[in-house]
Image (cartoon, rainbow, N blue to C red; front, side, top):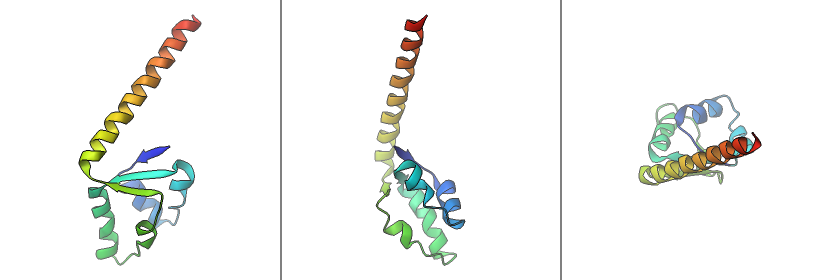
Length: 93
């Protein structure tokens, strides 16, 4: 499963030492460039070591244009699944 995340869940898990949960549960995490910029504040302003992010194979940083395309595809998949579930339910009646 691919997950698109904002800053709060990633930074919170990092700060409590449980960043390992993200790839363990979701596999790949995609963040917009703006989220990456916000995470870098932990390093520049507060001295946190973000090397775990910089070397993470499970983390992908994408420009906003790509994110919009990704979210559109995700919404389309959700609509497909919803339609399939409704059709199945109707067929059972």
